[in-house]
Length: 376
Ligand SMILES: Cc1cc2nc3c(=O)[nH]c(=O)nc-3n(C[C@H](O)[C@H](O)[C@H](O)COP(=O)(O)OP(=O)(O)OC[C@H]3O[C@@H](n4cnc5c(N)ncnc54)[C@H](O)[C@@H]3O)c2cc1C
Image (cartoon, rainbow, N blue to C red; front, side, top):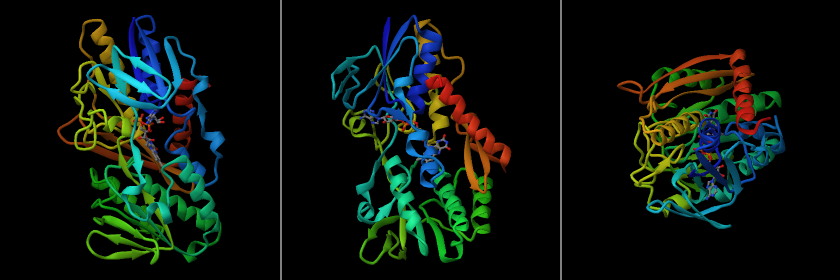
C-alpha cells in the first residue's frame, strides 16, 4: 500500500483525495493535512463581505470527510523535505511514498507599507468580515481598490468586488456619494483576453467605476490617505481596499521547492523536479490564472498520473489548464469565463453571459463540490 501525503485541503487537495478514494482506495492510503478545521470557497468571501451569508454558513467542516482510504489531520505543516518526502507538522511527522504539495498561495500584507494599518481586504475570511463591518459605516467618499501585486487569485475578483460594491451602495441609496476606483498593474482587467477585458470594462463604465491600468501601488500613506505609485504620483482615498501581494506559504519557501517565488512543475502532469513529489494549485509557477477550477482540474491529472504510475502506464489526458470560472456582475447576474491555457498554441478565454441562469449554475457548482468532497 503506497502512502500518499497531501498537504493542503483546498480545491486541489480535496479533489485529489476524492479521486484517490474513488479510483485507488485499495492501493493507496492518503493522509490529507490542513491547518484549518474547515474549507470555504474563494467566492464565499464575497458572500461574507456583502452580508449575504455568515461565516458559519460558508464553512464546510473537514470532520465530515468520510472517504475510503483517506484520513484527514488538522495540523500545520512546518517543514517539507522534498528529497526524502518527509513532512514535519506541529503534531508530528510523515514519510510519504508520494508527496503532493497543495498549500495554495498565502498573502503578504506587510509587503505594502501602510496596508495593514489602514487598509481593508476581502481575500481572507477574517478580512471579509472586517471589511463588511467597515462598509456598513461608510457612506461617502472614494473607495480605492488597489491590486498590490501579480499574480493574484481569481483575476476577475477585484472587478467583481467593485461591481458588487456598486450594488451595495445603490441598495443603501448612497451610490451618488461614493466613488469607486480600481487601480492595478495590468494593462487590462484580464490581460490574456481582450474580449473578456472589454466586457468587464463596459460593465465598470456603465456603473461609473474607473479602472486605472499599469499602476503599481508601492505604499499606503496612512496620514495623507494616499496610495503612492511607483510612477511617482499618488491617488487619494477615503477607504483603501487592497488585493494583497501573494506568495507561497513559508513551509514551501523554506523547502527549496520554489524558484523565483513559485513552484516549477512539469506542465503536463504537475510533477516537480523532486522524485515522487507533485505540486498542484495556486502555488505552482505555471503561467496561468490562479483559480480553484484550475487547481481542481490539475488535481484530476495528478490522480490519473499516480494511477498510471502504479499500473505501469502513462497519463491518458495531460493537463490543459482548462476551466470555467464564474464572475458576478451584480444585480443577480453572473458571467462565465471559459479559459484554456495550454490546450492550443496560445491561451484562449471567452465570456459567456452574464445571465440569471449562470447565477443558478454557480450555486450548483458549489453544491456539487460540497456533496462530492464532504458528502453533504
Ligand atoms: C475573493 C475570491 C474570489 C474567488 N473566486 C473564485 C471563483 O469564482 N472561481 C475559482 O475557481 N476560484 C476563485 N477564487 C480562487 C480560489 O479560491 C483559489 O484559486 C483556490 O482556492 C486555489 O486552490 P488551492 O487548492 O491551490 O489552494 P487553497 O484552496 O488556498 O488551499 C490551500 C490549503 O492549504 C492550507 N495551508 C496553507 N498553509 C498551510 C500549512 N502551513 N499547514 C497546513 N495547511 C496549510 C490552507 O489552510 C488551505 O486550506 C477566488 C478567491 C478569492 C480570494
